[in-house]
Length: 247
Image (cartoon, rainbow, N blue to C red):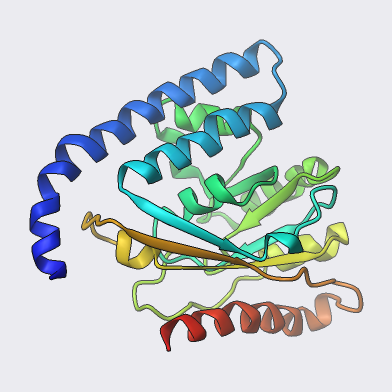
């Protein structure tokens, strides 16, 4: 059945979904740059041009999104948000449905996307050069000044999308930033997106994604010496929901 659905879906994907994504990306990116240039609030611009861009393009797939645990977020609190990463469509889920102001940590190559790359830079999302550890650390340190007053930062601590279906090992960057800033970690589990757009493919299909927002985890009592324990605790929370969804 899924193979038949994929065949029937191809004309719609190529003639409607992908062209619509390109056009809306250029339009929303250009609008964001213009609004920011006339001093419109970045939070307003991020919601108008980011969250709505995500929701519109998710609707076109169509990708249905269910959210659980929204009550675990305090909009006045800043977090280091940590999410698993299964698909490019994780970005649409988080940007469209998380519902709080946050900054992305993204690889520098995304800066080259027309309109969107410039817009993300002006919105103060954080580009890092993963090939240069020192430059990456400087970018993260420079970004700490904006993670306050309800603005959070989001990491995919695996560093890239999983291609095996199993969650990869976590890198330390998100956890060190949480320790440095003294703010809680907000674990998020996303399921379903790997079936909507598997990593390394363009086999887009309609489907349902689920985002589970877990209770924040305090960094109190953790240091650089036992940051591995913090990483393990957060990973266990995310993995628990992945295991439950697979059963």
